[in-house]
Image 1 (cartoon, each protein chain N blue to C red):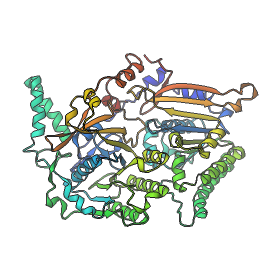
Image 2: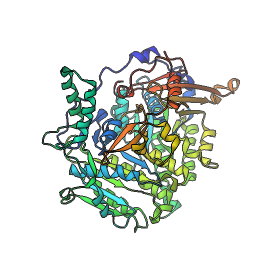
Image 3: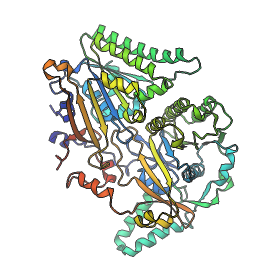
Image 4: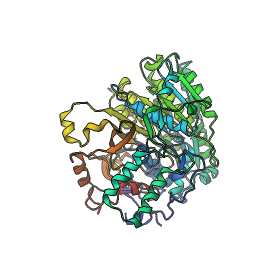
Length: 260
Length: 363
């Protein structure tokens, strides 16, 4: 087994293997900023979910990058998305050109997202009917672009995300969303990011180092694990902070100053 | 930790081995990307080869100075020299007039500026055995010099582009002033990009889209922030699926801060330009060569298509200088160590493995 545990998996509580019940029914929110992109966390989670030991299904809603981009990256990490797609374990929904026209206002805007939800729901239902009790992960690679597609009505996006959350209770899916934190930092009170942060069980935040970026440290991750699913005895929030360095096929994680 | 360390990939693409493109103006980069030149040799070097095809480049303007035009002019000229289709949109009434201000390439024969570099290098007295390597390196970057057009030209900002580059080509000029919404503009862009579908095997040409001062107040849509965002998003997805590069300049102060952040997130490559004040005593003391500078260029983000590894540059701020008052060069700032020293000490001792240039390619 060359799958080494790293700090990120530990912080997420994924270190007990794939059949860990805490992996399911989870809303995981990834936040990043212009200086430091956190898309590598998504890649890591895709690879983990599609590992050959599990039979999990990943529904990937792409707003930011096309399939070829993810395919190339995951291939370098040792995971062939084309094969997984043919095996019906990876469902890629290309939403790069999703437009919700502003002409008719609310109705069409909601329509586009409703269609998307319908697709996701159908995929989940089919998977539950045929695949039995395998775990399902729904990933959205850029919530802020979903807002753009919905023409700025974050309420529709919130509705959509709430719908997705019903899937977690109904079918035991887990959700992984990526959003850009710095967009909302200048806003007075942004319901979208506040609600998402409230609902999320785990928040992963990627930031640059205060001293700037260096070739061997690409940034820092803060993982806040609210740990509610662990039971009543560990109700306190677990928080970890560590640095990372991204490589083509893996990411190195290390505590500040522990690097020689 | 140790396990992940040893598992470094055994197959890394050697760029010099990758086939050089037969089409002038295109260059193969890592991860299956193809570069086109930005028209500024130094900027190409900084970005690791140029702008990658399918990427969206955004330049944040200085509202009080036209430095972004320098970047645009070189970018457009370079495309025209390579006979690449061009779409240019600007908020002026007569966008075609701007083509008259494009700079002309300096012919490699009377290329004194490059000679000048080598001349300076001679001060080091390079042994003759090694001189051939030196030449080779230059050759590598410049592309095929003999006969065929170079990948990246030096441009003389004082000479207008020769007429024959402007005629008989596909140049589309659009004024952004008249249109009330962005739908027609989007259609023009998609029609332009439809001629350049993405072929992975055989690329014949690459298109360039240049949009100047996208959210300028003279455009009627400039208060429709979400429409503009949605336009940029759809332009990005269109460009991604075609053989083209889009460069958009915008004054970030004219849109609200959160929207400006969204724009920055949408950009694959994000640059910003800033003028420097004429008589700033403090800056003049801090920076060497302050008199020659015309402005500063910041590299905020470098496109990373098909890869997750970020490009970490050694320096992100560069000074823009006009060499001999005609060609634009970018240089690292030579400044007193204020931020720099603390930054390197934070990264643990001895951990600094090589420069960023190698770090970008070996994994």
